[in-house]
Length: 121
Image 1 (tube, rainbow, N blue to C red):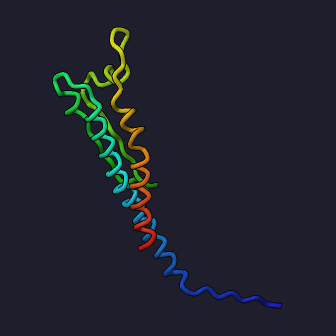
Image 2 (image 1 turned 45 degrees about the vertical axis):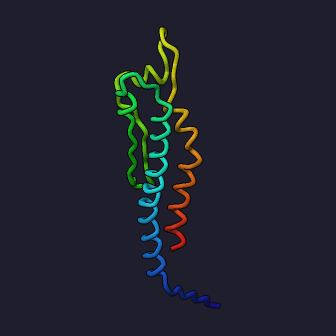
Image 3 (image 1 turned 90 degrees about the vertical axis):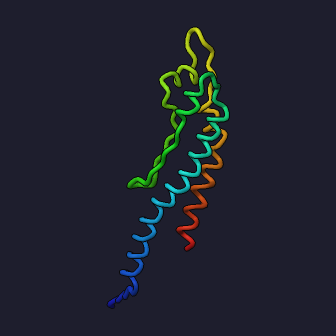
């Protein structure tokens, strides 16, 4: 007894999957950009202001990576870590972590929307 299996459209399916894979990195980066931007805005709202240098140093970035996307929200001022975490002589006044925690759901929703857009169409 011989069994013969014929597969049609395998090449087209492989090309479609490659296009989907390529589109997902960009979609993840787009959703992540929206999410980390909201996190940075939240950090600016929560940031204690003396001279304004700390608030002005808050930034967000995101980019596509080989296996998805990566992003960061940072405060580049030299004293940012001391304000966020405190010192032996100054109480902590966190602004980055609370903002990131508050916007986590919005970030995940933005990435999910972007990925659904690629998958559906």
